[in-house]
Amino acid sequence: MGRRKKDLPLLEKVEITDVANEGKAIAKVNEMVVFTQYVVPGDIVDIQVTRKKNSYMEGRVTQIHSYSSKRSEPFCSHYGVCGGCKWQILPYEEQIRHKQRQVFNNLTRIGKVELPEISPILGSEDTIFYRNKLEFTFSNKKWLTYEQVSSGATFENMNALGFHIPGMFDKVLDIEKCYLQNELCNEVRDAIKAYAYEKGLPFFDLRNHEGFLRTMVFRTSSIGEVMLILVFYHENREMREDLLNHLRNKFPQITSLLYVINGKCNDTITDQEVHLFWGKDHIFEEMEGLRFKIGPKSFYQTNSKQAYELYKIARDYAQLTGNELVYDLYTGTGTIACFVAGKAKKVIGIEYVPEAIEDAKINAKNNQIENTLFYAGDMKNILTKEFVLEHGRPDVIITDPPRDGMHPDVIETILSAEPKRIVYVSCNPATQARDLNLLDVKYKVTAVQPVDMFPHTHHVENVVALELK
Image 1 (cartoon, rainbow, N blue to C red):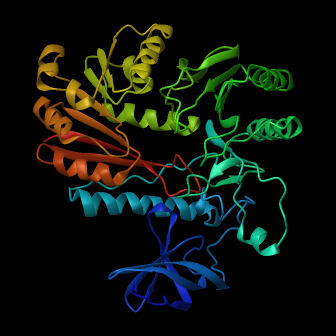
Image 2 (cartoon, rainbow, N blue to C red):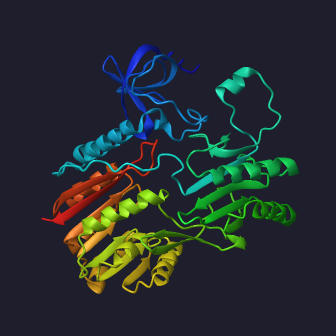
């Protein structure tokens, strides 16, 4: 007979005292830290413990006895179920205050390096409808909320077009309105759903891999261009063309209408052929007169306005005079490389995605930028001491790595190259702090600027300037 699990306690009238990473909230009970969600500091709540470890507990709030004065009403009807925008019950001023502290804590506790005064976080002018890209999933088994299940009602239509429930790959919440992207996104999504219901188009079965409609991607640019990518599980030319023609006629705002036939097990389309149905196979974004081509697989910062502010900070920190050789690591489609090229002698961009490097070359050519070179490959294999000997010792390195930060081999090469300045752009201050600790043997931090790219979430971007000691 298996060991009987101990009953986990119900913690009554507990005060929420702080917020933590991943949008969680913190309480303390008998010196034990308790993590929960969807509450804010100052709330008095009951917490049903769902997981108990030696040093902490996790639980869900079962009742709120009193609300904090530091609380906003959630603006989205899906709040608490969707899993996104978890901080919308925190006033925006509180959100950015916590993000500022998150940067400070990571750099001091993990980085353990000498720091200048950290600049006040740069908040986002737009706190809703700020994203330029969203992805939605079709499912024939929509997620039912606790209230829906408790009602005892029968739901004949179990199709959903929306977002995955956190931690559940096969559960999708049907989205009625999302506040992350402009209203056209909501209109297009709802039109696709209505057409699919009318015509009886099968939504995808995420467990059994059956159905027709699989995912959709919606991208916009600040100059009004719109891309829609519809992903089908298998080809049915008549059904596919009828739907795409319906969208083309109903939404003339769409300038790039694309589709993918993806019959493999996962949803990623990076290894799939993208077909053009109507319009162009790309959209353009603009920044300071520069035009950047964005294809269906291209990476571009998803908050266009804040991306411009971020790049200006990076360029200022680089202190370019026109005579510098700049290495732009993890260059993506070359946006930062092209953005700083006008103030540098030469910029070399390195990126591991070959398609992104091809876009980077096109972006440089389209903007008549002739002082850039781009290389594709694994960063630790491309950026070597031999590469530096061949192309020249950089005066400045700008690095914008993925969330995992930089590989130790990359850091070793940077230390060997000894650029005068390093500008480190990061979407994860924790891994950035780890890397700063490794760079500390030769570099001192001279400036720190947090930037809020994603309001109502715990995510924060951070730019750090370093100088050779």
